[in-house]
Image (cartoon, rainbow over all chains, first blue to last red; front, top):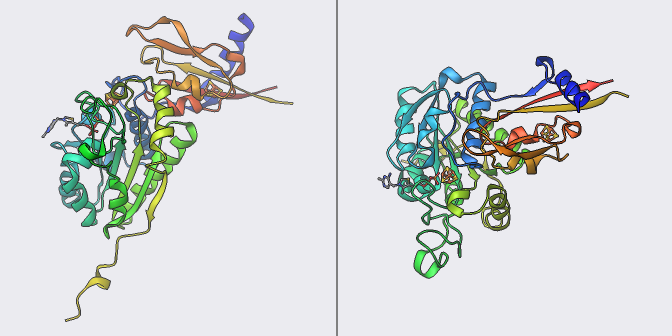
Length: 270
Length: 75
Ligand SMILES: Cc1ncc(C[n+]2csc(CCOP(=O)(O)OP(=O)(O)O)c2C)c(N)n1
Ligand code: SF4
Ligand code: SF4
């Protein structure tokens, strides 16, 4: 045992460091439940900002939902928005500061329910912003009510017998709708439940910020995520539930990869 | 032949015991400690320190960025 401890001390040296907490994250302990996907996505955004060297030039717009306090954790400038209005606020911020990197960070209740209009119109205008969309199929903050994204049959506080399409409608694939809009440059759906998935999501978020730098249109990154408290299962079981039930309906991958439509091509002939 | 050997340092005060790192580790290095931290969580620790290969999988999936990873070539 003593020998093992000695070996470890030989490895734990600055020159052997391969991974540490991003310097763009603050020292505040996150208020999220143990195992919540929000923390993983915050970390990825912080790492991308650090690697691109844009900490001084990035402005986040935080939503209403569990991630309302995102501004406590990622050490950049932030603007808080009213529920669902983050894309509208981000539009204003980006137009006032066109040389800054501006992104919204929103849950599915925020982006795909109360904020559907702001979401669709911001993308349809082709605003040069990044939108990060955390789809955990439920309203986490308010105690686990049904969201538009809740799966058919999924039990929530407001669907105690499971989501019933006749009563509650179909789950909303808002990312598929967004991919149809001419203002969208890059639309992708990712996840963060494994190390490989985390690396892919990081690439996607980096690409989204690069698209913003090149003024190609709106870059939209959905992350299919878990809310283990709302789902009332453990974090590990939540990842399995997500893979089994959400991935077939919300398939991962790029939905659009290009740039917004050329307005000249759409002009009337007069 | 030189062997690659890893080690992790878990911040036991900020760990919330979610268990995601334990499941993500390909070498069964990690486990949740039987003791709890100041917040009452069973924190993650290296139960089999010899097994760690320094792949960083545990740290990548950690929502609270509690894990620092080191890797060295051992002669
Ligand atoms: C105008 C307004 N309506 C309703 C609410 C209540 N409310 C707070 S958070 C939330 C939903 C959050 O769900 P989601 O966006 O999915 O985020 P999560 O908490 O799951 O991360 C609601 C309905 C509010 N704060 N303001
Ligand atoms: S309620 Fe759900 S979304 Fe909110 S912090 Fe807890 S696990 Fe995360
Ligand atoms: S670095 Fe890799 S091998 Fe070591 S504890 Fe983490 S996941 Fe396991």
